[in-house]
Image (cartoon, rainbow, N blue to C red; front, side, top):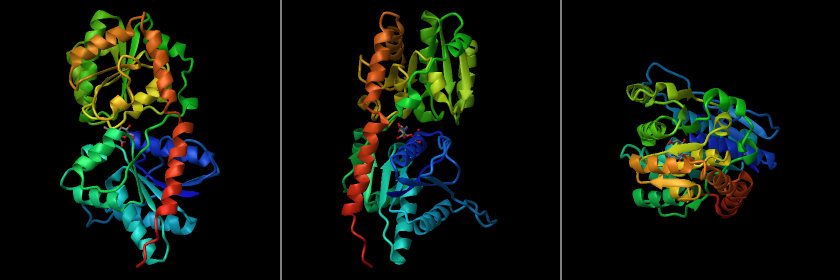
Length: 379
Ligand code: GMT
């Protein structure tokens, strides 16, 4: 199959899922055409089945906002036409689903039919998409997609709740390539950061408000008061400066390191003892799954789709959003040497349920169904 994949080329979850999916599909013999405005960070390998097409957005003095959606739709038309692509798979509804609809209509006017699959990832539904500025376009383009998937049951329900969507949505969860994320032996790295055997706690995110990084820092603050520990914060974003100030104000700057955006996040995760994800909302929690694949237990909120990943009392614990006291209590319990090895083992066992080789066939079957069912529109 020849598949065009559209995504955000960032460290964010939807871009990672799209890139890892494309890589997995390419290894399975499909021809994959990535269509993005920049090379995605995880597209870091060579495979004869992977192609990359950059969306070129010419500037013009008239444009206060460059019309990215038009440039993207045009590039989709070009790639489908020149490369004989069978299907377009767009990740994150805004503006990819509506750009794909536009491309589909242009191609239809030229007598070519290409179905569109849209994967809903999270904030495209729960935060940004339901804003009145975008909602009519998001609703229309979801309804007009030939196939729709969401990364959790919770996100599927949220889509029906917030949008007038009247079509089937298939839940296909996030996945992890265990060959990349199995625990590596990086004990020298751990020794450098935790020379006195401190417990290593990690949070990774795009540093947006929805991640509630203050709660992660406050949880760490109370944990380190009772048990020697260090905190690594991976990622960057709008909250970074505020969080750095908080860490300084709390007087724990020596125990906290800001690592910024990291490609090889698995190297940090492979020496971690605990992962914190106190998010306000989280449709699935890919970063937590990647931590679990490195045998790292999870202290999270119970928001969104997190209960579909984190098994209470088994892979870690969940607390109500903002309940830092409960997270501290749970973190201390998990980090206790009498409990930690079991939680680590359970985290890996759970991650194996989301191994790439289990989830990839679900996408392939979805594509097959869409290609069989979707009827070329007759003008
Ligand atoms: O919104 C974000 O934080 C980034 C976003 C993305 O689309 O890049 O992440 C979302 O998609 C991931 C991959 O499907 C999910 O694992 C994340 O839970 C989800 N983030 C939120 O729902 C906040």
